[in-house]
Amino acid sequence: MTKIITNTFNPEFLAKLKYKTPFFLFSKKKITGNYRKFKKLFPGSTIHYAMKANSEPGVLKTLQEIGSSFEVASKYELDMLKKIKVPAAKIIYGTSIKPASHIKEFFDYGVDRYACDSFPEIEKIAAITPRAKVYVRTIANDSGSVFKFSEKFGTDPSSIIPLLIRAKELGLHPYGISFHVGSQASDPKAWAEVLGILRSVLEDLQEMGIKLDVLNLGGGYPCKYTSSENIPELEEIAQYTLEQYEKLPYQPKLILEPGRGMVADTAVAVASVIARVERRGSTWLFLDLGVYNGLFETMAYQGSTRYPISSMRPVGDAGESLYALAGPTGDSPDVITREALLPQDVEVGDKLIVHHVGAYGLTTVSPFNGFPKPDVYFI
Ligand SMILES: Cc1ncc(COP(=O)(O)O)c(C=O)c1O
Image (cartoon, rainbow, N blue to C red; front, side):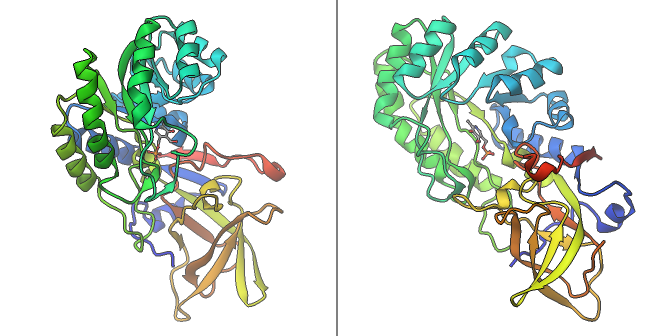
């Protein structure tokens, strides 16, 4: 059951906003607060915000102003950073399989750090960006995460050294190792577990005369979407991770690539009820916001995101009941949840607040059925 666990955006304040729904509202203060928290809990680390989570210009500028670096996944994302004059030194190209034409654009801009996880990718990088710094992405145990990456990306730990050696042979700089524990991770020890495995890799590399500059802990830092989720605090994750980090034979600089953890809880979406319909024992509320125009992650794939949802209408004497919520398109997967607890007397025209929608909602909007991307505002 979906229950609200924070009240960051006050409903009375939201009710006064006369913007056309659906719209997204971000808090710049929350974005900078999250950035500071990562910096404080991982002292000395560099935070490369994974901009795939949200590339709204307002989000990028807020992070740029506070000093963030960026993890970038394509030349299209790079173009957004070029527009706001983020220097190449603050950018890493973090997808481990990349189109050659995109690598060339990063190289031309002066970006010199690239992820890789296979021999062909290293050859490709070397051919386009001589003397670049490469870091090898390895797999992680992502069984505790909602969205898993280690099927599609990452080499086995046993291939890290051969890949870094090949990079060196090709004139590249063996810069580091990266991994991703999966997005919305629930195991606070997931990052530490990988560092435990990497200990002997670092020792072996050192014996071969290769000392790495960085370890890239990737993303995965979770958002507490609902009170029922057993989600660790960042403090706990940092504690376990740094304990293992200290046990390494030496301490390469740490890079973190938070996406969700940086922006998920920094925004709400406001949507209107466009229909209330009884269907085979359930009450359905159709909204002007759904899977395709801002809530993509509610559509189950490997997992799905359960956003807390509340009503601007106060709970009256009739109390609350359970609703199924659907988006406005004609597609059957456009269902947000089947268990929203909202006031009994919700009507067409009422406004609902969807909480913690800052990550992966706006960057995954599709023009399906022609519904446009919602308007975006900042406070
Ligand atoms: C290479 C890389 N880094 C960081 C992230 C951000 O992950 P998260 O949003 O779970 O923090 C992703 C997500 O896809 C990624 O692919």
